Length: 185
Figure 1: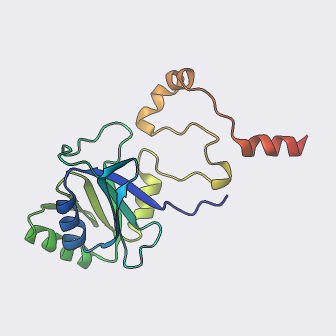
Figure 2: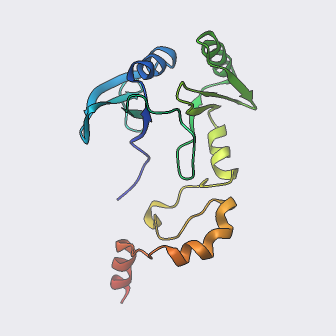
């Protein structure tokens, strides 16, 4: 299997109408479709993406009415980075968000802001995303798809927990590794 990227990311919102107003009207994403959450049919499943609904551009939300604003915990999505073309794009988005009542904070070649549910976004000038991915702490560099999942990967700040985690986690066998071992014998 050759992995080329993610198809979509799914979050939870407490208010579908506010979600549509922010993502479609403020950010200008296309509402690709609206369905129900098949595991909880009383809840909407909202899909947003680029103008074509391209895989990799899709952000989706399940609406659980009245859900509290986000408070990021371990292992949760806390920031979504999106690429923009230029510094001028950052200026445009800073002004647009401010006009809609959303405060943004400029960084070096970036703009951070939160949606109404406190999900953090960072708009980053293209080219900088690769720098960030290869120099920041955490899960910063993708694994080679041929060896995906063969090793326990930990963010730098949690490396000190490796002995404890390795004792608690059940080792998994990667079928590709077993197939290669059989082929070599």
